[in-house]
Image (cartoon, rainbow, N blue to C red; front, side):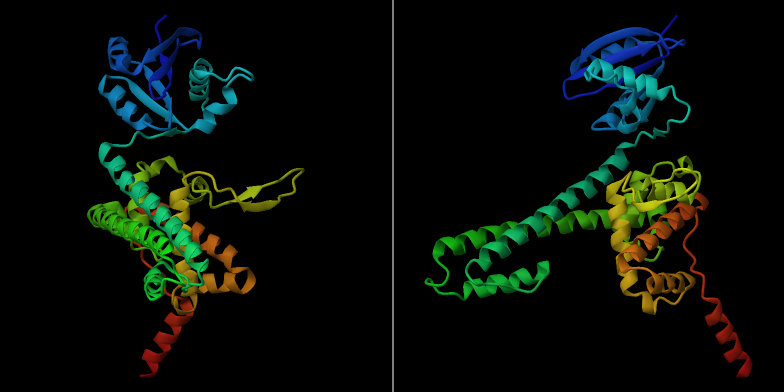
Length: 354
């Protein structure tokens, strides 16, 4: 009986292969080196190859698809429960991947194209540079404070801090300290330019991509968030509803339910953290403008703010934004805000009186 499925545990140089037949019995166990991957799978009869959706998985997915195999990617947490206790090694991981893929309830991750991964590379690089900017800003402020130099919050205020440092004399700010501050500030300015260039490329993608343009019409969703969602979510049909999409982003509460009694906790923070963070940041900007948001959603948000803490209202709005994003991607439409009923009736009454 031939091999019908292969579980492939990838690494930097060594790859573990675990093949099974239709009955689920192990028919192949082999360790491969990176250079022999293509030759090995080119000699195999077409079958289903399953990998964990981790580093380089999408690359190997495209390569193996080109060789005639059907490639499926599973989330690492889906395969983890099937690793035999006390036998954590590459061979056990490959066998666990096969076992997980045979379960009917397991969901697979679509293989991304080269273009989608290129766009995600822009987002990853920009996020790293912004993080490094924050680290440099904190270090710069900390060192300057040792010499009595402070500035208001915000990255833009670092120039004010450096101007104050340049105005100090040798006795107040020695040359060695001045050199340290200038080195950190110089690196900060360099990162600022590089991050701006990446942001410009991301904005360009958001303007070109049809899905991103539709998502950008949602209040609180800017070009960066729209581009990130469009490049990450390759098949919105994998999510049955907007609630499933919000759950995938980790924007739904944890459940601690038993005996028919439902208890909800904090959000799960499962799934894609980058999209979730961007959605919450966008929701925060809309919460600040809630008083001027004249729409049905704005009225809903003001009602939530009247009953719940601001942070909870922010996450609730991010959840609603995720559901709206699912609807727009599913129906291939742009966002059309619903005007408040009271405002509509008032406008109609004014028009009738005139």
